[in-house]
Image (cartoon, rainbow, N blue to C red; front, side, top):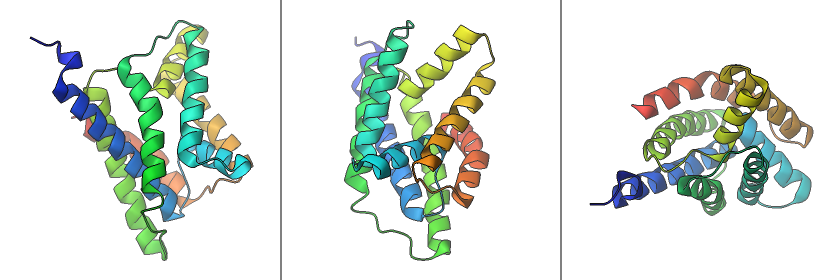
Length: 191
């Protein structure tokens, strides 16, 4: 009998979750209402360097994984899949999705993006194949400095949001919607 962590069902669940996450990010980008912290950072890198948003996401994930490797965080197979496939899915979906032409369409994109993001997070975490690199960073920093995860996560999120904004990412009402909606959406998705 196969281990549940390496079962076909777990891998299928992981892939559905990663695709959903890529779709959620693409919807939020095309909403033109502003981005959540990590997406603003990746989009800022895209604007600053010209590389795709997905490639920026992958490279940031690699950098984080390299950093956390040296402080003892070891990736699971799902961590590597998370790091690569979300970026790939973002780049595949952005050219297909139209940009919102009216704020009401943008709002619909954004709300759908938050809900899909919450559900997708539940899928990929529930697969049990490893946490994402950004989650590993949050836990490692929390353990090193002795601060609660919520404080570390908030500081990391504010830092990458500021860096994204400085590189030209859109910060707006969507950023506020993300901040208020992502926690409940992820909790819903984990059920």
